[in-house]
Image (tube, rainbow, N blue to C red; front, side):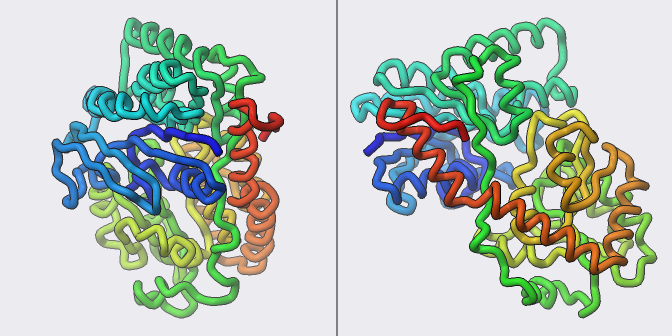
Length: 414
């Protein structure tokens, strides 16, 4: 049995307040008989407001699905921006320290830090060193690269200082993993020894996908015509995701007789995108849906939409892609042709250059008018998910690698 301390800021309230994938990992480790504890923040995302069930500036302790969860308060800005986001993350790094101190007597075997929130890296390393644990950093996106690449943070002095600190910290983790091969390679360029890195892709609940041939209940809920072809975007509506481009795509395809756009999610660009689409009867907006209904939501699509800002290319592999592929629907994605994202999507959808709204609209229209093509590409997407992204297989390999890291198993490259 391993003792695993999972540490990271929360990005969704389900299932454990540390993001969907980390929450799935916690559940899998617990089911395998390991002792797992979580230190995270009060739920606040994506509304950017602390959940009403919690007192905004108070610590909270609870048990979720049999796992002890300790929550630290944090400052949540009303309108998150570059510097405000940094202060927001720093506030959690500071307030979570007492919760980490409480874990010292427990003496975990592994301290797992889920990033973003790289500002928490020093505390994770100190906790691991004081307890004799192995320190594992799992990178969902390279937040510092994205922040500078998108202009959220600027200044040569800051750049040199922050990148120097990142490189120093990365080299002190016992293991660094990420969700795509390009992102793992980026860790190596930042100074991490290749033998201390691994690929841990975001997984898909392949077995939980909505049954093929059964219409999603969301079609009736939205009042869509029986012959509607649905182009679906589901996820955060923010700058990094390029959601504002979808409004222009919808405007270009306004006159299509059967095509309907469904944009599901919340974020900084939600109001702006809704305003741009206010006069379009074939564009439907939905708030963030419960995780339990994700298979129904993904099955609503005939075509999945995946815009992506070029500044984030290969710094982040969109986590939403795994569900898209598992649903057995084709994907239209914006990506650089030499990127890992393009390599994946090219066989099961259409890849267009970043920001090319005209090409994106043409791709959506092309697939909307060709059901046979949608079926063929969707089958390829589903097969890829079964072969490479099945939740059970990825998590089993991850557990084996975690055992090997602490000397209780044979190391396997994921």
